Length: 69
Image (cartoon, rainbow, N blue to C red):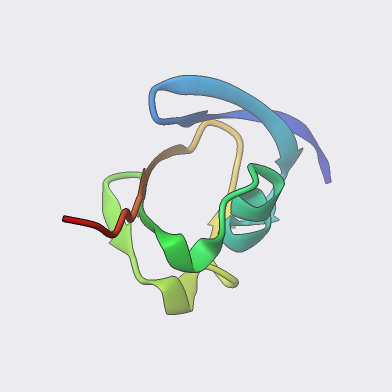
């Protein structure tokens, strides 16, 4: 594993890559069950988070799920 850059919500983020999406979310202080994620244009189900591998140059969009009215 080496430090690399991916694009998260339009911003460059330096992190250890390759890594599992779930690991990346936890390092960003995000609870995996509280977000919706798109990886390189493809929606990712929460059951895939532990197995989806992020690599240098990947693009992810992360949206927090907020409850309320």
